[in-house]
Image (cartoon, rainbow, N blue to C red; front, side, top):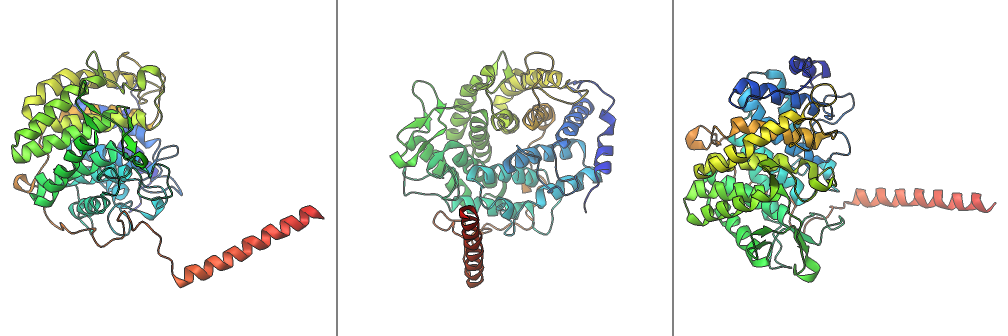
Amino acid sequence: MRLSLSSVAATFMCVASTFAVTLDITSKDSVCSAASAILAGEMDYYMGTRYGGTVGMFSPPYYWWHAGEVFGGWVDYWYFCQKDNDTFTQLLFNAMYDQRGANNDYMPSNQSMTEGNDDQGVWGMAIMQAVERNFTNGDKSWLYMIQAVFNTMNNRWDPSTCQGGLRWQIFTWNSGYNYKNSIANGCLFHIAARLYRYTEQQVYLDAANRVFNWMWSVGFFSNTPEFIIYDGAEDTNNCTSLTIHKWSYTYGIFLAGSAYLYNATGDQKWLTSVNTILNASSFFFNNSIMQESSCQPYKVCNNDQRSFRSLFSRCLGLTATLVPSTYDQIVTGWLQPSAKGAAASCSGDGHNTCGQDWSLGSWDGMYGLGEQMSAMEVIMSMLTTQKDPLTPKTGGSTEGGDVSAGNTTITGINENKINVTKGDTTGAAILTAVVLSVVLGCAIWMLF
C-alpha cells in the first residue's frame, strides 16, 4: 500500500494551528501531542510519500542510517500514541520493511556501495525496537530480521588486526575500512544484549561478552584518569593510536546494552558497567540539559552529530526502565529538564521546527532532521520510561525467529566481493569497448 501525501498530512493536521510545542511531562496526551508536532516536522524531510521518492528514505544530505534512527523512535511513538491509527501504522511498516534488503538482513541493494557496520547496526536497533513493542509483522518477522542483522555483523568479527573487533566499514573500497571504532562494535554489543534478554540464547550473551572484553583489551574503554569511551583507531598500527572524540550515542548504546544484560542475568558485572558509563555520561549535560558536548558548544556539529542525542535519549530511557536504581538520576535529573528544554526549542518556522540548543527556552535558529529526531526522542522518553520492553514472557512474540538467520548470506569480512557471472563479464567487455570508442572519438575530434 502506497500512502498519499494528503493522507499522511491529515494524520498530523491537528498540530498545524499551533505556534510552539507545549509540553506537560505528566500528561500522556500532552507528550503525544508534542511528539505529533515534531513528527510533522520530520515529514518535511521524508521522501517515501513524495512522487518518485524512495520509501524509507529521507532527503539529502541525510543518510540511510538517519532513517533507521528515525524509525526506531517512530516505533515508540506508534506504541504509546498511534496504535489505532492505521495510516501511521502502514506508513511506518512500509518505511521499515521496504529497506530490509533481499536477504532480510538490512543490507539493501540501494546501500550496497556505502553501508557500514554502524549503519546496519542502527537499523538493527530500530528493528529490535519493533520486536520489543510487538509492531505488526510482515512475511518475515522483525525477530527473524534482527537475528539476521546480528549474524551478518557477528560474522565480520576480524581478529586479523587489533586482536579482533569490527571495522567501521563493511567494504574494502570505502574510506574508513581500516578504522575499528566503538560505535560499530557498540552496535553489535547492544543488539546481542537485547537478543539475549529476549531469546535467552547463549550465543548472544557470548557475543556481548566478547565485544565488551575486547573494548577493554584494545583500550577503547579506559579508566585513566576517568572512564572514557574512545572513538576508535586505525588498525594499520594495531589500534595503538586512539581517537578521543566522545559522542553521546556511543555512550548510550553501551550503557543500555549493559542495562539489558544486568536485567537479564543479574550479574553485578553489568550493574558496575551501567553505573560507570552513566556517571561518565554527565559529560553530555550542562545544568541538567542534554547537549552534544564535543561539538555543540562550539557550533561545529555536522549533520550526523546533530542527531546523536536521539539515540542517546532512547538508550537513557531504556536504561531507566531496566535498572530502576538509575531512574531518578536519568529521568528526574536529566530527561525531564531536557524534554522541557527541547519542547521550548520547537518554536521556529511557524510551529514545529526544533532547535539544537535546549537551554535557551526558545528556538536558536538551527533546524534539520537531526534536531527533530533528537527532540522527539527525549520528549517520548516521558512515556517510554514508564514501561519495560517486552519479552516472550511478558507478551512479546517469538513467531518466525531463527537463531541462524543471515548465516547463509555472503557478508563475512573476507566475503564482501561482488559475484561476477559470465553475463557480467560479457556486459563489462561491451561497455568497455563503448567507452573506449567514445574516448578515442573525442581525442580525434580535439586533434582535428
